[in-house]
Length: 361
Ligand code: DP6
Image 1 (cartoon, rainbow, N blue to C red):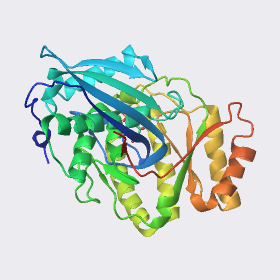
Image 2 (cartoon, protein in one colour; image 1 turned 30 degrees about the horizontal axis):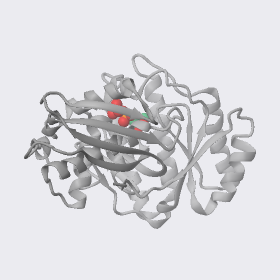
Image 3 (tube, helix red, strand yellow; image 1 turned 90 degrees about the vertical axis):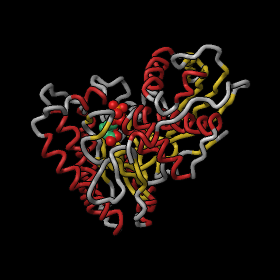
Image 4 (tube, rainbow, N blue to C red; image 1 turned 90 degrees about the horizontal axis):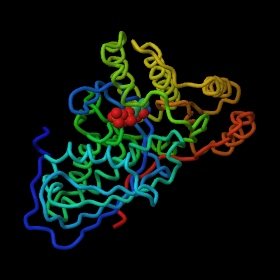
């Protein structure tokens, strides 16, 4: 597979009437972290994530006839209001995919989008936003240019397009567990797009993720800037080897239903991600004292109660508490009576293993 497999064509005939498509696409949580990129948004190491269910973006994209040809014209509506800042980032993204969708210069676009979770909750909204937009673009491509792909080809193309908007977005296109980035341990894996993990023990289909909100302010350092700080990072080489080893170990654990190894690798990846931030040449810290308190407590509670709980972190201070469906009641009690007991915000978002994007229209 190469980039040229995805280049497209212009409109076969000028558009006469508006055409709309609507997709719902979820966020995802990485268990092996993508941290560092190169070239045209390519990862420096493989990553592995779980597609979520309740945290998603719904996007409607309408193409209108346009008299003059030129750069893509876009009107961006976020949660019922026009949003210039989002419009600009999306406009730049549309420019960058004009080789895949040459018809973008021949139409006017209106994009209407909203999330099911608060924008500032610390959930990676770029993953759901760019995967939803990529799906809309691929659906319009099919309707406007008659591009016919089978279901998997369509998802792979959407994953390729989503990656160009935000790396982690390319992993939201499939149900359950997904790998992005070439790894020896998964045949067919590639840096260009994500592929689903098919050998998954049923126990991992009952995974749950409760996000414990420690702080929902905008992050001091964005993920994109964080990726930049991996360039010439003193531990870059070791990190790439470690991610490869963790991906292979996790794939094996997922296949065998090995929860202990799963827990060990998931926490190792979360702590590594934040250690890499702190040890970058321009080091920074996104954890808060409350983050450290809660993750230490999760480790203690695992020992004290024997419950199969662990944590992961995104590039932010909020904690993803990972556990299994059959312990939902005990874990809920721990969250309310212990983990969030003295937390002023006491905010949480309950999510779980998801089934992937849905076409709404
Ligand atoms: C820590 O996908 O948000 O969540 O490609 O620059 O948009 P861009 O970055 P982004 O990075 C996500 C980083 C992470 C780990 C992960 O999701 O794998």
